[in-house]
Length: 174
Image (cartoon, rainbow, N blue to C red; front, side, top):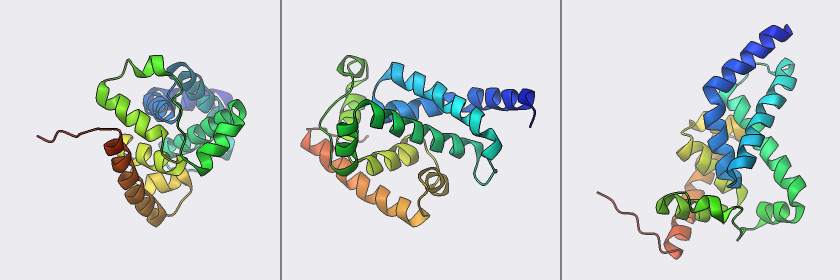
């Protein structure tokens, strides 16, 4: 593929998917400025890896997978101990309280509850329920089977509901 074609393809993808990728990363790390940087890193990595893209998944799913890996690498390098804790147990930290206060009360409670879930639960909830990917798309991004996505999502939602209830969140249903 010619460089001009690669440039155009990445620019087109950026126009179509950058907001979704940004929101996905933001939900993973909670820092607006860093999420912007990692979004750009995602598209840079996509540009560099475009020759390896085999169209086995959609463009969007491929970008989500890159974004997830870029974010995990960032977290691993920035705070290796927190990364290990995040992988094996729930974390109790919030990355940027001043940014979270800008969110509405419900979003703040949801974000705080999400940060306390293990990473696999957080990832599947963000991809399926917030970014509205299909089960198949989520499986492709996470490199899981579709059944694993279903089971993990079911478990994650139960744990998230329990976490929200423990924090005093009451959902108003109209």
